[in-house]
Image (spheres, helix red, strand yellow):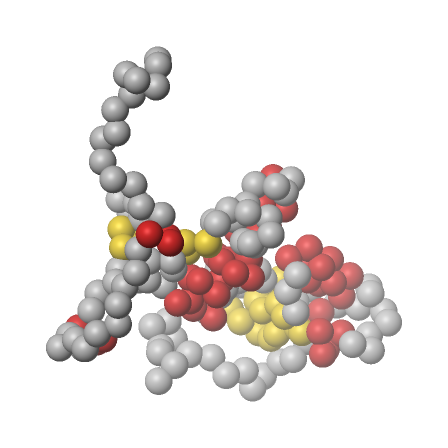
Length: 171
């Protein structure tokens, strides 16, 4: 295809070609919807999408953007396992509430807990027995523990645990 046969379809603008002049407006910020439809199923509350670049987006930025209503695209310059870990971190941070926490039973050992904490980079694990919360194990509980074969039940924080039913808000 020769240059002569190519046709310019329309005007193309870049960032430096556009200037928005600040002016008074009768529209209040609370009346404005800056939401944007990213895909058929994903609507953003703010039109901000971070670049899928290794110098830009990993879980930390993706979490921050998600909390504000945007989205961060995790880059692909990581082994697939690391990409999955980054996505897992973002999903687990949803609204500051962990909806599907990693749990252990009270008969597991301190070594088991430390392995899980290291693998998922977490500092606390809810301890359950028969689907019921019986304690929580945190870095604080393990700080001076030297016996890694000790059962979690002997070192975890037990009652009184403060819990709330599903649907409880922070207000």
